[in-house]
Image (cartoon, rainbow, N blue to C red):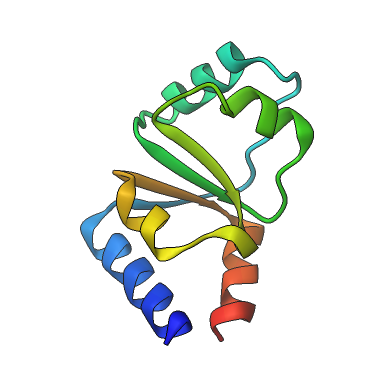
Length: 102
């Protein structure tokens, strides 16, 4: 039931144009300003970023932004997917989702 729900939500997000896939998302320093600039350069607001692994810099730089959440693939849930206007996945996160939902 969970896998079918997640697959359905991801499909709907793709149809609505709210799902994006990028190569990778890394921040060199744990600075919120750098993270916010990187998100703004993508032209997004109210964004859920799902990666294959959240490193320390990514976690620390995103935690103070109210309309941004960064999750590992294993911690992604249906409520988070529909809560945000935009969902961004890294390529490696897509591969892990395919394994999990397969």
